[in-house]
Length: 151
Image (cartoon, rainbow, N blue to C red; front, side, top):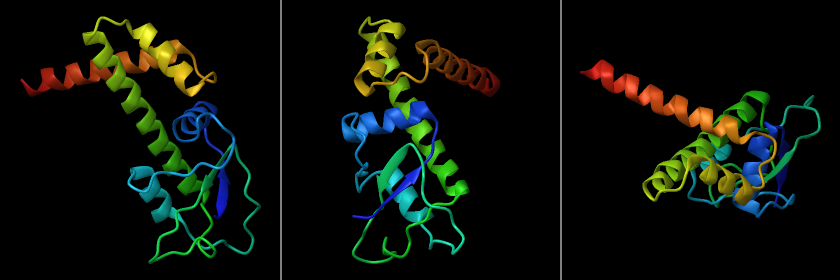
């Protein structure tokens, strides 16, 4: 098992640790059938000679398949790669919270309750409930604007 550390936004680090590690600080093993696993696999590169030592707030286990890149040699994620991974984690988090907000609204559960439970489930403290709510409203407004433009 070969790991690397990456530095991402604190609330995304809390989310990814909560989702895949039960909020534990140990290295995160991504599921083999997920988009995030494939993204990390695709972005792994050989470590440049002058590359600094890995530091960050999230430690992930590098994908290891029977064929292809070996993590012993391809164990480096550039700054650009980390930004791509960070964006994928952010998309994953907001897709999950938006789906929960829509589903729970049909059940009569308020947005704030759903957001509270979501943040509590993944122990997210680095972002406010209001930020999740505002993001959901922006997404919903953008969807409405697109529908109006199609008519």
